[in-house]
Image 1: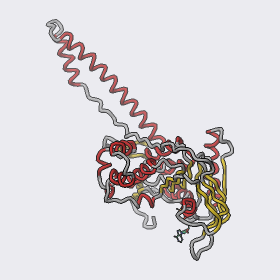
Image 2 (image 1 turned 90 degrees about the vertical axis):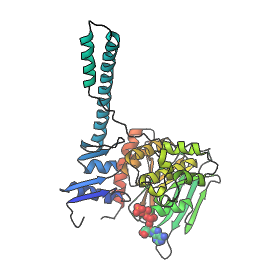
Image 3 (image 1 turned 180 degrees about the vertical axis):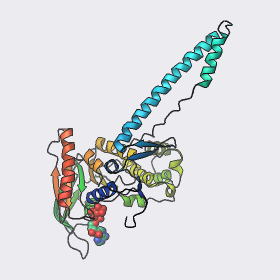
Image 4 (image 1 turned 135 degrees about the horizontal axis):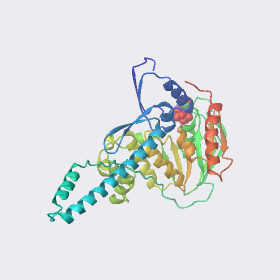
Length: 378
Ligand SMILES: Nc1ncnc2c1ncn2[C@@H]1O[C@H](COP(=O)(O)OP(=O)(O)OP(=O)(O)O)[C@@H](O)[C@H]1O
């Protein structure tokens, strides 16, 4: 930004940024008076920053829509409906003319009328079908139940060698009905706490107990980076789950938008979002009791984010998600763990019985707690 370019091209600029940084960037870009082209999956960010949407659709065309992302969704749905109605009307008119032609083709009296119908049919402009974007379905299959609490963090402290404690006296519990977002500014220790919970890091004090038969499904950018890129998605699956049948794997990958050749090409040639989908496909196959997700929406496109949100709303496993994505957090979480310097503060939804009250609470608490708690800024 310092060089003040004439054209600013940003590819997923909000990935990894905390709320402060995203708000700062939004304000900065709202005042940007030169050309800005941004590729982003962050719906709230797009709604605040852009004036036009270029939609790269499933039929390989780029169509321009005036307005922010919400307006684009409405306009596109209207365009799809209107196009469908025009196609139906045209099909009906064509059928009508065709039946007239078939009926009176041999009739000398109506030869002129038949000819004019044939000409009219030939003149008819064909209304092309607008292809819907491929629909995605993510689903976490239900695991067998295990007794609660499935995971308990008791009086935990952690510090990296030679450094002061990142947090101490942390007491938390997770079970299969948990819907928790762990939020806080960059560098405060969220990923570290997740690693302590999973067991990658030992706490400096206190204990983490996990149910004996507990299966944890974890997603992090690290796991995407750890995929063996010389393999195809199908080969990676077969290597991890040797008992799985290839046809079942292909169907599963296909439902996540990794059908056809995509499942058979080397993962080094997949996009960032496609690699994330492979990692998610593997997690789903494990039928985890607890899902531990670190920035799961980075690199996913908006349709995939919606599919993920839907799957997380429906899933029967416990959920702990670290995310700076306001739309994701406010759509699924009923509890916020706010990471602050040295501690973790728990905030529970006060009205779990009312969906709209919970939605309002999430948005208020999400913004309020994060902006109040943090001292970081760009
Ligand atoms: N292996 C390590 N050794 C020493 N310090 C580390 C190590 N890993 C992380 N840290 C430090 O610990 C702090 C917390 O890092 P962590 O990755 O947990 O933060 P975070 O809250 O997840 O940040 P972000 O939102 O940017 O992902 C940071 O100051 C980081 O530099």
